[in-house]
Image (tube, rainbow, N blue to C red):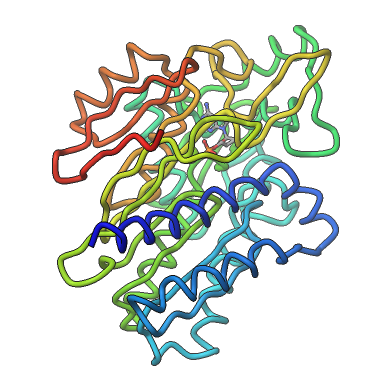
Length: 366
Ligand code: AMP
Ligand code: MG
């Protein structure tokens, strides 16, 4: 039994780690329109062979969306057709086309272009994700702020233009980050950014939202066992086997190499991680990563390097994981405890804090 669990651990972690490893090249690959699937194909084969000892029917497909590699793996779902796969990826493309701040024709871009000018009517789901993002902003006292766009547009982390902005630019952008000035009209589904220059960026929550949408779709098609890996954010349908959870790995927050830091049991839920190792650049010998402190305008630098949260809602876990990185140790621990979250924080010195229940069987992997 132990061997089987170890195998599954390796499977989940390896895929998760490998896919996260790609994130720094994601942008350029997206621009090229080409995704190098070589590494992933190798993983697939290895995984299929390993999994075949336990589950014989495995289908796996990959795509690149929301600026990340996405792998969907179904176990014992022979009814799931090519059309169903197509629909799965359409769901992702549709979310990206409507919610990306980087796509000029998206609903989010429309809101941003009309900042300080007029409210914009949006579709139900865009409205709802913005509403949820604003709610998390309020819950986290602005550590998570969907109006971070003015700052992320400046830093441009993950693009060819990433650079350290001037202090004057940061000071200016800081005035444009405030979720209280994100006005939602629940009757008309209109969204308004009160000041010109404000911008919504849903990068900290959209992957989780889309994982939830794919999760719902797969379940509606009768899928009972699946692993959804959205660039290291894992959503699990069902369990590894009857009464046997999956074992999911937490990546060590380490930019140089890909190691598993710890692992837990999980089933039918989402396990979402954020970290300063995911997207970053170096300038004048200093590293700058993609999670921005909305109060300073700079990438966070507070001793927390990785945070993972387990919840049913991948969207919520996604937003919380990003927020925890911003909060700093004391506030993050308070938040986790007050909310009763199951979460782990991994610190710069590679020690950690976690609140996983005993039956998670939390294990440090080093
Ligand atoms: P994640 O990988 O989920 O932690 O999200 C990181 C992404 O969220 C970044 O690439 C930005 O698009 C966005 N982001 C950065 N800082 C924040 C913040 N403080 N609040 C909300 N979103 C943020
Ligand atoms: Mg997030």
